[in-house]
Image (tube, rainbow, N blue to C red; front, top):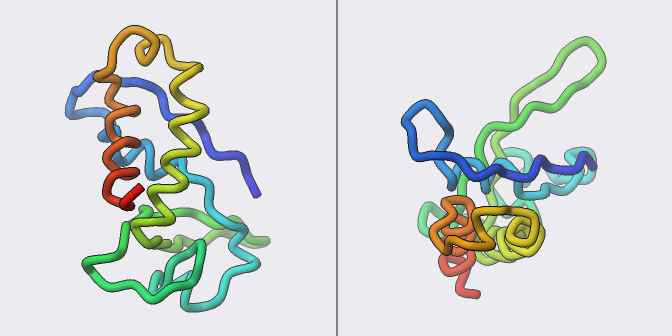
Length: 122
């Protein structure tokens, strides 16, 4: 499993990805080869396999999978609880390394991670 890229604090300019998009893109996903068809399609949570509805799903954005001869896009989704748990882990690694987090509680990456954590009921 590839190590996700740690999101960087950015300004709020419209040319950059939103902080939420950065956090979601950095959430660690399980290896695609070990997932069921339903997990790859986004019908069930990519982490724990529970059925998803529009109200319970977190869209994890398009991802690319490289294969011999090319690549394909897949669109994983997770439940709010699992996404919140992964956002918590991400925040624990982001905050100590982020200069802005050390002095400013409004770091957009930290705020976005905290929102995902709260949405997950954690």
